[in-house]
Length: 360
Image 1 (cartoon, rainbow, N blue to C red):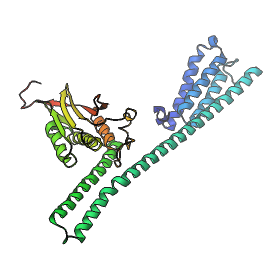
Image 2 (image 1 turned 60 degrees about the vertical axis):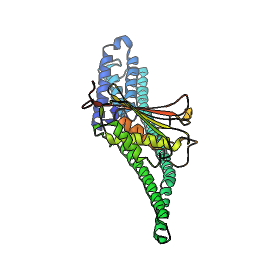
Image 3 (image 1 turned 90 degrees about the vertical axis):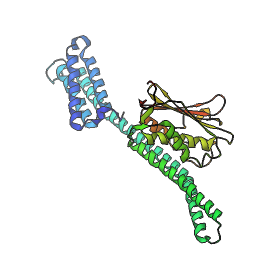
Image 4 (image 1 turned 180 degrees about the vertical axis):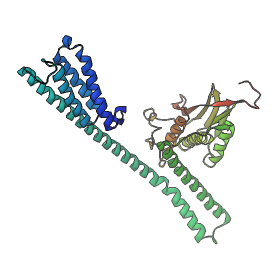
């Protein structure tokens, strides 16, 4: 209710709309008052005040309640066009109407305030929950690479004369891997921050999807050195006009996610093709797939599977979803019947068949 467009009105507009609404309803009732009776008109005006109270602040609502009572008295209660009320029954009904209209306005406004406080409390609790989840995840994910870098650096500095060239190479490799891991986690946080702020604005340019996939695999070569990866890109694909950086990050996160969760015997397959005016990217594996009861949650921020390995912030797949949606695309996840998971990305794109010698 708090997000309704009426609540964007300033105080002046709320007064004008409240008064206009009462006068409009009263005008309509005036022409049918002989048919429905002036007591029914009172109920219609009460409903109007109730509707106004759902959207506006307390003072405009009270003005509407007072105005509706006076209008009903002046134009509808016999004798018309005078504020005098001759019947004791009508006087009592007028006083009751006046009280009911005011109480209705006040109670409705209080209910709205209570709902607003409840929503703010729930939002605060959700924010704290996400904050705690983030801290718990990062406390491990950031501490591990930082500890590795510090330990390797200390060894290189304090034992430089005693270390062989091979030992030095191993320590430098550890520093490099830990730095990449740290960079990935910080990158995920920055990407999520961009998504939350609505800052993502795709910068589209032409690229070859083949080159993009192999560029991503080269970035992940250390993580994938013991994992078979099969690339199956359809021949004679056109160039696609999309944001290279966003698409690259999508493929990167999907492949990285698969590499950290599949068993040793599994194979990762990356497919790409063109369907009508869309780039279709498929990343699948022959692992164990996802638990059916958790599949709807895997794209949520900070969500990690119950039986997943330790570590990880649970941001990778939520960033995939955010980047895909920023380019007006869709992402779906399915478990394959024979085992394993399959992510399918569809991104609407301009196509170019220049220099490919085929018909569009």
